[in-house]
Image (cartoon, rainbow, N blue to C red; front, top):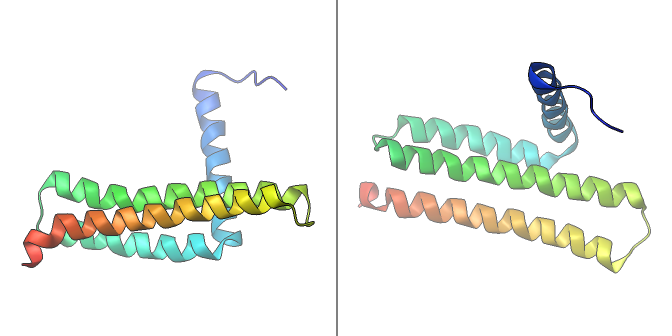
Length: 122
């Protein structure tokens, strides 16, 4: 189905769809809620720390990236669950890969925080 909306109307509608995605993730995904709370705390800490702007942006960006990957993982899981509840090797693989992507992103965020704050701690 073609989308006939263009310009500002399209942007408004896209923002509405995005908001629906955020609310669906918050309502239906415990991991998203947990990581969201952790991200808010991390962002507050990053804003409170006495660091330069680039460091602050990297600290905040790393936790926002975790949230992006978690939303993508949740989307993959929703599509796989929509297809059916029967076990299929590819369905399990898709879910496992999405989970691995989240884990790698969390590890990256931890690495960024440790690497950037190391000099401030010691």
